[in-house]
Amino acid sequence: MTRRWFALFALIFCVGTAAATRPAAAQTDPVAFVGQLGTQVIQVLGPSVPPAARVQRFRDLLGGDFDLPGIAQFVLGRYWRVATPEQQQQFLGLLQEYLAQAYAGRLAEYAGEPFHALSARQEGDDTIVTSEIIKNDGGKIRVDWYLVNKGSWKISDAYVAGVSMRITQRDEFASVIQQGGGQIQYLLDRLRQKVGRQ
Image 1: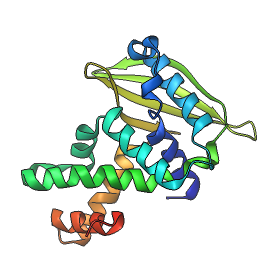
Image 2 (image 1 turned 90 degrees about the vertical axis):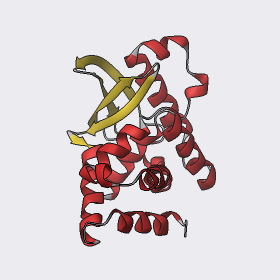
Image 3 (image 1 turned 90 degrees about the horizontal axis):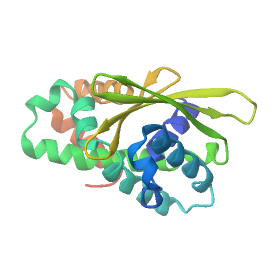
Image 4 (image 1 turned 135 degrees about the vertical axis):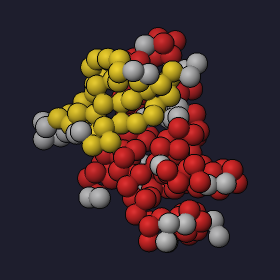
């Protein structure tokens, strides 16, 4: 994955850190939800934020504004069904920490760039909000946010320029599991190494 894609995904995973200051309209209107959060994140999470604080913000948002259990089941794919309940819980915790650490350092590239939530449409159980990031050179990057309503809006996926974050992560993890002979424990051990949980 290129550094630019990694930074874009960091932006996606960072939308949600301003949840505590969310106005009432953003709690019911999906476009307002994405627009308000995206704008605040780009403005606030620049390079001046200490790395440890940035990682902690990612941990908080992943546990609050993302459908992390749903994402975990999707990215583990068919291996979720054969994992033991203990392995599922381990994976959920490791996934949250892995994503927090992996994406936390990459957001600064997009600090200050304009972000606009444009419209929403319904596809089955998903509400999809289309948005765009205006780059410094005038180019635009389209991001489609997939939201589920579980009493409040939760982000379940995002397509950056047509590429699904969940599918990208699922393919990466499936490759690791295959390297380990199809054993889920191999992925868990690798994730522990990456996040420093021995």
